[in-house]
Image 1 (spheres, rainbow, N blue to C red):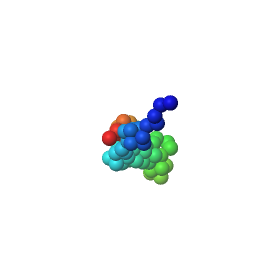
Image 2: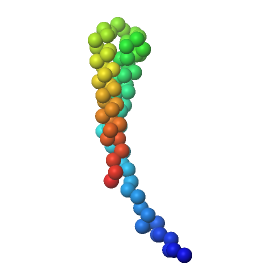
Image 3: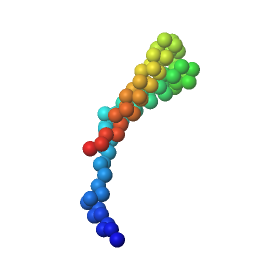
Image 4: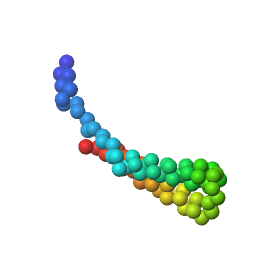
Length: 75
């Protein structure tokens, strides 16, 4: 029979969550929820031209992508 490995030998690399990337995700999601054309909370209360809402939605989506790309890092 083979020997069982000690718990110290089976250590896997831990993953670390980046606080900056969490903030990018939150800001991107908030921008998208507030400024989405015809559905956004801010857009439903005030009239905001489509030029600003579509560009804000694209910026929010880009921030979400950047946030999720570096969200988890291995130590």
